[in-house]
Length: 187
Image (tube, rainbow, N blue to C red; front, side, top):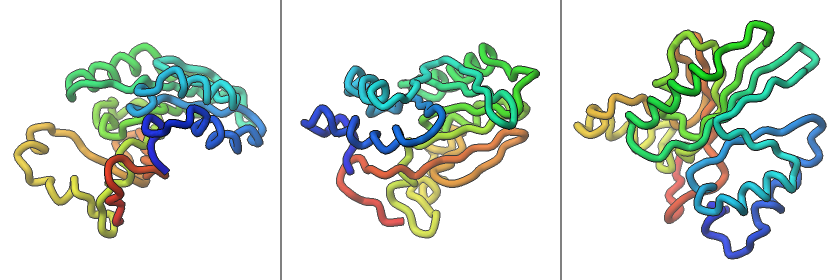
């Protein structure tokens, strides 16, 4: 599977999302960087499949266990300072609601997880890094380059797939189903 912007078939994403119509209840999403290259097509595919798109917005959903707060982030293009400020603004704008049982954030890029204050009590769902794209038993190219002066200067943790925790926050980074560039997925 390729990313959406590489397809000539304007309905490929709509068809790929159709199985989600069978889910009882609501489905929520945020956009990733490739979705912005086909912004209107992506938005229409979500809408056609009953998926509620959250772009720097939140919704409180009533569940059997009680109300759940879901916050969706727009993808931030730019360096670490831009991403850090964006996440800080989201946390300030959408504070934990007292009456909710759980709090989730949909943020495409898991590397911004380190910018979320440690006491936000939030579970973040993300993707973006394609499981590291090149990995051997969870050793990714990012981990192999960890001693690189460039990555040290960025001072960002790079969770590429799986479960992580930082303070009172949790992160699930999905490895994704597609790839970008030539197919290097090894791990």
